[in-house]
Amino acid sequence: MTEYDLKRPNGRAKRKLVAVIEVCTPFMSSHNKIYRIHNGEMIVGISLTAFIYNFHFYVTQIKIYKDGKIDCWGLVDFEEFKKKVRSGWVTPTPKEGGRVGMGLGNMFFTATNVKSDVEPEEFIKQVEDELRRLNNFQTSAEICRVALVAFKDNPTPENKEDLRLAYEDVPKHLRKFLGDMDSKDWEFCQALEEN
Image 1 (tube, one colour):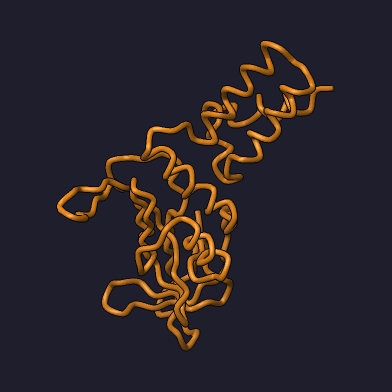
Image 2: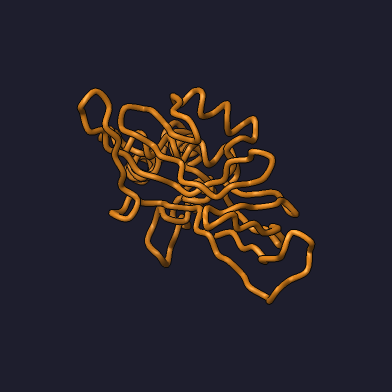
């Protein structure tokens, strides 16, 4: 979760107000399902909240489609999307002190006290997982759960290494969802620490 203190661009607060914008969507749900029509065919997808940096940071929905196209103020493939994230055009969080715009009648505010656990490379992993989910392939979390079971059934160094690699493939900000709401990723971490 990312928090922002809303201030006027001149720095004076009209009133103290904090906006909370959810940028971590661990599971596909009905509220973020989308589609587009291409050549008369409906292509399903999902959207994730992020920011586009175009002189200022703009809150937007990154639209991820089953055919591998991603709309981030322009329809691109996954390789081009990664370049846009690495260049800073697409970012999961604004920089401290950045001016943030929302599509609510030219509303702008300055981002202060920015707190986020979503790193750009981890956001790329999350988008890749959503592409996998849309195409009925195992996500990194599902692969990691399978690797844990394999390691618990047969705790060899090779299975432990497979588990370590699978765990590292899960976006850091989503690892807490590997287990249940109480255990989070504890069981995975414990298995990786065993000698």
